[in-house]
Length: 526
Image (cartoon, rainbow, N blue to C red; front, side, top):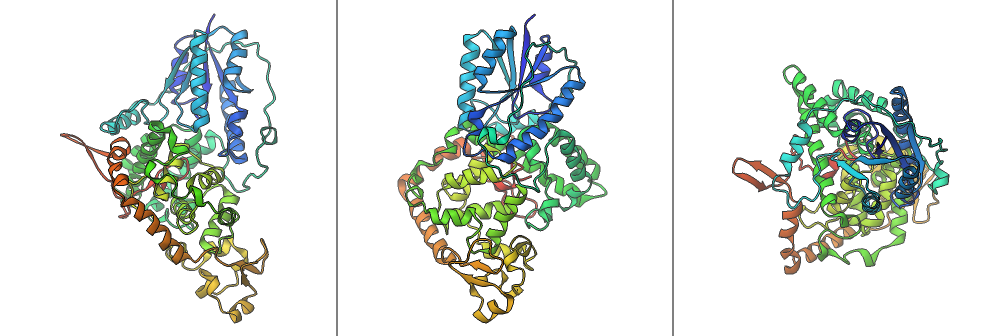
């Protein structure tokens, strides 16, 4: 008897799983996960992503086993795996969620579609987020998002499993896939049960600190929801998060207005999550070329490997920047404002092209979500032309969000004895102060030395001013300005009004800031 194959990708759950639900209505089901070597060979893939995936898969496999089935985990390219399975099992239907991923997953999905057509297999895909395939414009996008998140959640269906003769296959280790050995020791662990515990803790306790706590790297680790890696890998559905948050918000509205306002802000970021993923869905080239082609060549030909090495090694000489890089390396996470600052520093004073910086950051972020990530890289670098230029001064960010240097001292041990008055700009310390606190600031400071700190790689103010002048000079050119309208029409947000959609700037956050992509719960930021 023919069966349906459910292909799990970044939707590793049984609850509210449209593909699984649809397959169950057609008879026996075979559950499949494919570990794709070509995907893990990409420059945006990291050991921590794979480790988090395996942790989540273990729990999914236990869930399938409890229902009487087996989760088949195979290694290979998807079309090859499907061909091997088809030779053993006469399946006539493939069910999966839609995926808005990097260029490799896009090409793979097109290859799967060709394979299915040539083998008479029906491939059914279902929306994973509030993202619309083949969207022509944004006029009614908000209605699609609202309809998706308001629909009833799908409980795990009653399943009849196909008894496949496929023998179990060992799961490859990270070294087998050519992944770097580093796995951040303090990163979050995968699994739906952990995810639900994090959600419960956020909704019932931590949400009251959300509005005021998400900007500072000191308070953000607990004030932020910390749900983004689970949402990115699909251990929880977007619909689940939206509905659970909305229900809790109603419960808190009367007696705990601050907590309710925090959940309002969180709900707005769940909307922005899909808004930005839609950009990559509508324009996959965002991953590798400037959204506004008038910015081609702006930074690409000036790429400075010394600047890039200083950034990625946490040796820029700016304490707040280097502390953030150190935290990322150890935890795989950073709050939205500090992520924005890192990209801004890379794009302006260091004048680095966004793509190699984006590939490096993708590997650092446990919650890497391609649609949000690449849109943000371009927006913060100024190559979209439809967003305000965002330049974050790392000294001012430290003064605003770490005035006592607690965060900097935590992640930069060499600066722990530096007085507060010099901590955020150690290159200004007189020689006598350096001697007194046992820190030498110099251009040749050895990496990792407990008594040395590097000079900034460039003069911050002058380099930033020069970068902004170059960007704004290009932005004023008539041909660059003329191309802006088409980008707004294709990617700009809309507000739904009674008379129809209208173009609109993003709604301000509750604390008065304009919401940027880093405020979205991406893969990266919730």
